[in-house]
Length: 203
Image (cartoon, rainbow, N blue to C red; front, side, top):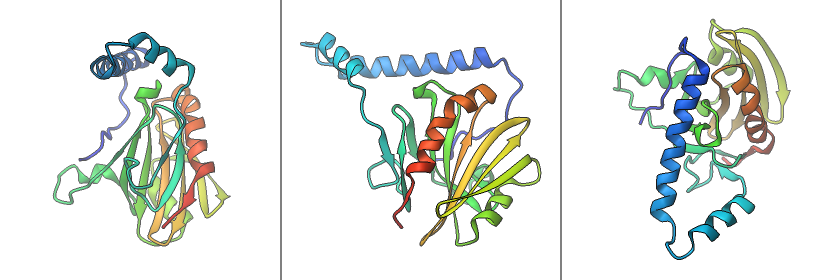
């Protein structure tokens, strides 16, 4: 299934965010109601509030996205594998430079609109691959060396974004932070930093 990957829209941020979060809240509430035990609903809710679940790990088998890397994920973020059919007319939306999207991690359940996206590419040099990934429409690109690869901060349509790429035995893996605006970027940055700082190459 191809990801939801559209250009930025000129729209009232407050209205869009409120609508998307309301839908997520209703969906989660429906799931909780369907799965909850009728004998102890209050106790279950209290336990969930008092002891939130630990952060997940993405990349391993059974994690939602199987990748040649693993990394930590903040609570409530929702990973989903992306399959790209080359015959699909929308397949180009899941490609940037030499990279093809492999995993989309939705921030809406955690309270934000954007995504962390994981991309894979054939073997290459991380910085050169990231330069192709950015294309010609971004501005203020600044590259920094990190463990096993390179990170870049840049402006896309006037908004800040970040990405990093690392080398694995199966090729390159890139992780990008795709936010809605500057406020969303700041709110999502800790989740991106967690992915970068806990990343381990496994393949």
